[in-house]
Amino acid sequence: MNTIKNLKTDWTTVAVSGGFLLLFVIFALIDINMVEGWVTESFNWSVTFFGAYWQLLLLGNFVIGMILAFSRYGNVKLGKMEKPENSYFRWISMILCTLLASGGVFWAASEPIYHFVTTPPLFANDGMTPQEAIIPALSQSFVHWGFLAWACLGTLTSIVLMYAHYHKGYPLKPRAILYPIFGEKIFNKSFIGSTADTVSIIAVAAGTMGPIGFLGLQIGYGLHFLFDIPNTLATNIIIVGALILIAAISVASGVDKGIQFLSRLNVIFVVILTAIILMIGPTMFLIDSFISAQAFQLQHFFQMNLYRTDHAWLGYWTIFFWGWFLGYAPMMAIFISKISRGRTIRELIIAVSIIAPLVSNFWFAVVGGTGLSQELNNPGSISSPLGDGGMPATVMAIMDQLPLGLWLAIGFLIVSIVFVSTTVDSISYTVAVTLQGTDHPQKWMRVFWVVLFGILSVVLLTIGEGSIQALQNFIVVTAVPVSILLLPPLWSAPKIAKQMALEQRIAPSIEYTKEVKVKVAK
Image 1 (cartoon, one colour):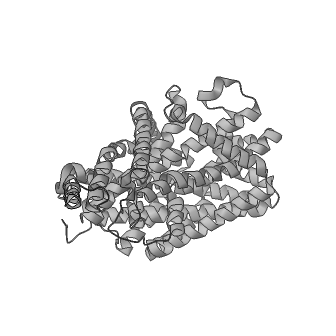
Image 2 (cartoon, helix red, strand yellow; image 1 turned 90 degrees about the horizontal axis):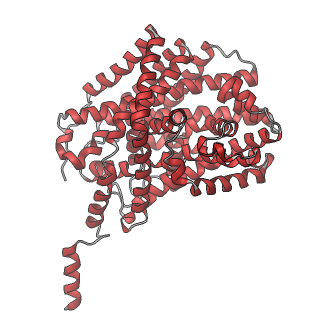
Image 3 (cartoon, helix red, strand yellow; image 1 turned 90 degrees about the vertical axis):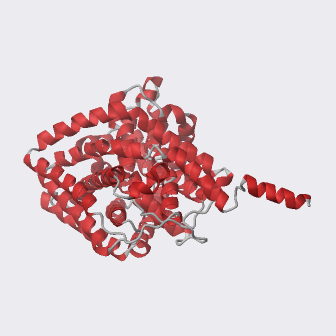
């Protein structure tokens, strides 16, 4: 087996990626309007020229993953380990809590209402009644946080990474995605390799700093709504500080302790919240809506995922989300690779591409569906707070109309804090892995990136909410080079699956088959 020994910290990538992020913040401090102008122009260019490619890329990733999972190659074991390191519940918990979960907490309440108030353009001319508009609204949210979104974060790419690292002994870095094309030279002072690592770190950092600041603002709103705590800059900075402290403690203790503990804890919290809302809310409406919206999504699967008519709407919704998730993909694939050793290709793809989306969609159906029911029965009860105060106001408005509303709202705040912390600690861990090339990076490197994300987020908060919005759009821009990096796994992952199947005698080679036939004939 080829092995690269004496792994050292990649200080060049640290300097370039960290320096780029610092420059972004410094320019924002100097002239936020100038930065917003740059980002807006780049954002519009990215949406125009890469939007269709991203839609096809995500669809191809999902479809090829499904074919692999249900072929004989689905039995291939990954990571050179006979038995998984984590139990199934722990494994699924870490997947759920460290990918889309932090954003989904508040989007679950708000996005269905957005699509209910303004029907998505694909169905806008259908002349639906308010009752009929419920299902397309919920279904559109399912598309944005469902099968394709999750699949791009850790299926085909993880197969390539696990093969390069655990089977071939190369460093666990985003550049390893290109190993099937360039071979060993991608790891040896390669400009292309360094670029792959750098753009992946910048993209995931932008995708993490934005939600830290954004959710800090949302939690600040919630505390003000519930306890009349002043929603000031100082409050928001304290909240971000608390998030970073929790994340730092978690990432310092490692994946097998802190991260998996917080993940399990949060899944338990979410299950309890979901069960309570189901019991005291419009139970049958929520169950019926979930089933109907899933069926509607499957019925219009290709139409909704490949819709290309209203470019302005796509840039605000689908393409924005695809850019955000693609930016996360290399780092999340590294994290998935770490926690999935001993799993089969089938287990990996079904967990990430099927189970996680269904759980996520059910969460959207319960939280967002409750809001839709309230809006349907009392027009303006949810849409008005959404228009006046944004996403955090939507969550509070929904909870306020339920029995035990205060306690449910507090539960949402706790879940939000832990979700953000698990996202930050897993991202910081993967950045440290990228810079040191091993799935056991040094503790100081893990903690350093948590603290850096926190400091940069606080600085952006001091500039104002405009800086967070600029960073949100910047996320999409950084996804452009990353999306190119994620194209090769569409054909390299099936080739690697076939190679490992031969090695594991799951798909016997022609020579082996002939040998068996000869023995049988004798």
